Amino acid sequence: MTTRKRKKSLLPQSESGCDQTDGEPLKRLGQCQSDTNPVHEHLSPYFSTGESVRLSHSFFSQPCADLARAFLGKVLVRKLTDGTELRGRVVETEAYLGGEDKASHSAGGKRTERNTAMFMKPGTIYVYPIYGIYLCMNVSSQGEGAAVLLRSLEPLSGQDVMRGLRAAKRKAGAKILKEKELCNGPSKLCQALDIQRCFDRRDLATDTEVWLERDPERETVFAGEMVSAPRIGVESHGEWATKPLRFYLRGHPCVSVLNRDAERQMQSSTDLHNTEMERTA
Image 1 (cartoon, rainbow, N blue to C red):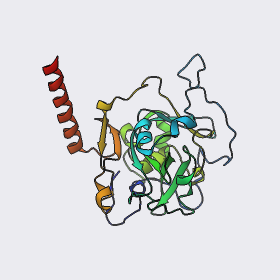
Image 2: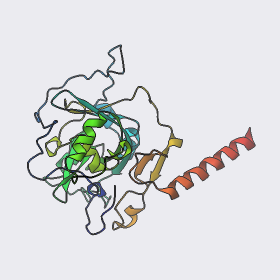
Image 3: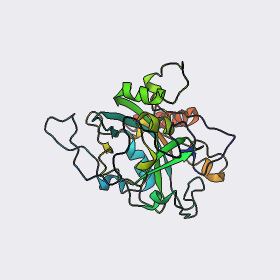
């Protein structure tokens, strides 16, 4: 995701590319069916036993930065109206703490019609437009006005459909997107999964069109795989500009923006730890 310096947003969640309008939702494969979908238990095709891997309210009910880290490695699923399920592994997030966090839409406890979802129960989806045409998806956590921005995914299934959804709003003759380019930014993610404005205030733990799963092939993301770095596009927010509230999987090709300084510091800490372990062995 490229930061656009000519405009400021209260949340850098609002600075990336996504092809949705601020008016009527785009009428495409995955158009919204209902804002009051019934609860159902999703059974992952990964398990022949029929074991549920869908994450419940208890997963989302944790402090914002903890939830942002916990999202890494989980699988976001989007079910379209024709039954197609698009899947992507979360590889990058940002935490917006509300309250004193000046980079947040809810800074100072400010509550508006637009950011209401940030104050709802953990697991509530917060979708908002930027520049009138793009969307970003967040999920509320514990903490008044706190939410996690989903920045990037690794496409797992439905890549051709994702590519078609992305291409629908690109210029004619544009090059075919590589797989790593399909969801490598918060608004690109929304476009590729057809996340629409009407998803705002829905419950990610119970919705039938979008939900989060454990990945049976990658149950745990270890601390050594996770980079903590400053968030994107918050340079104008004082001390909050440098707080390491962006989290991503180290070396992953689908991450929107790598922070080489943070990665070098992380490697230095790892090397120092290993040296100390060798000395005491």
